[in-house]
Amino acid sequence: MVMGATVSKLEKALGEQFPEGERYFGLENFGNTCYCNSVLQALYFCIPFREQLLEYYSNNKNVGEAEENLLTCLADLFNQINSSKKKTGVIAPKRFVQRVKKQNELFRSYMHQDAHEFLNFLLNELAEILEKEGNDVKDSPGPSSQTEMNVNGTVHLQDNGPKKEPLLTWIHKSFQGILTNETKCLRCETVTARDETFLDLSIDIEQNSSITSCLKNFSSTETLNAEDKFFCDKCCSLQEAQKRMKIKKPPSILVIHLKRFKYIEQLGRYKKLSYRVVFPLELKLSNTVENADSEYSLFAVVVHVGSGPNHGHYISLVKSHNHWLFFDDENVEMMDESNVQTFFGSAQEYSSNTDHGYILFYENLDGRN
Image 1 (cartoon, rainbow, N blue to C red):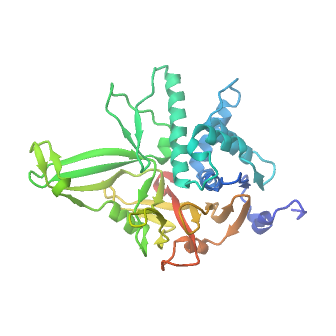
Image 2: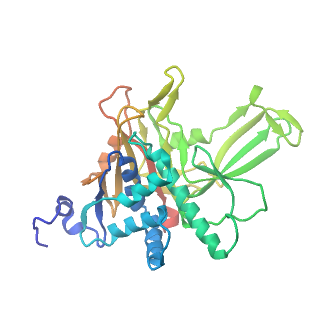
Image 3: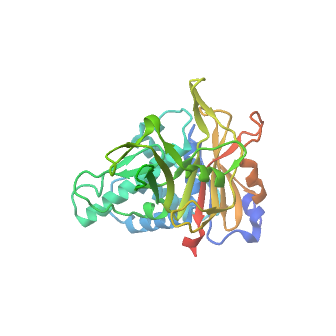
């Protein structure tokens, strides 16, 4: 290989180890779009997602005057990167960003945006477009099911209208898991279980903890008493009860959002929690209904850089072909796997390190084999 001026620093660093057919492109920032760029890099290196999106692109590229939407813009962008003759470089995701702003006024201002809100919006929007297209193909009037969002990125299927099986799109097949909410009446001991789907898990964090302990807390038993009593259908009255949340069906791609922005009553505003939360490269998920351990491997981290919730910057760390890379808008560099731990957070409240893991992307190893 001739090392000319056209060969990037990254190509030189990887040399013969540059993965066959892979592309590493930075994304231009349009003023405040690092929240978008960091999430897009994580999704690009989520291989099942990328493959499905590129397949969608090739199946739809010859469709005449197809209406532009968020899905077509993202498919175009991924195809632009994937089919580039150059191995590295910078791409401006202008059309995609314009589409995001057109679609959702939340992202129109030049204020600091939340990468997790953006990820949530994007996955739900893409799923909705695919559902609509799937239903159009089946020629059935109306959407497949009414969905209602809540803050945890959880989708509740509403029961009104005739029961119709919701269409499972490839977004759902990759990211959707099922939680079961078990409530046990302490008088008659009847257990009521209610299932809900999720595309990501938002978990509370504590200082000097780990993802494993935060997930255990997420599934810990809570007693409902005093004003919080539970209406038991069997007893036909309000009763004390125990409630817990378990993962009934772990997803292929597990996205964990660390709740680093907390509303502090005394301050009357949100504060960033810089807590040190260890996230392992390999994660065993044990709080599942079947109690069978699901094994996951970390492949991307969206990092929030900054001391407060209303300002700062987002970057992403990505694992590709056993190499870790650091994506900061236009800039792409190699990094050592051992450096991932510098993004766990700070053990002390006031620290000069403000680069903290915010959204974690894990792939299920059972699903991959």
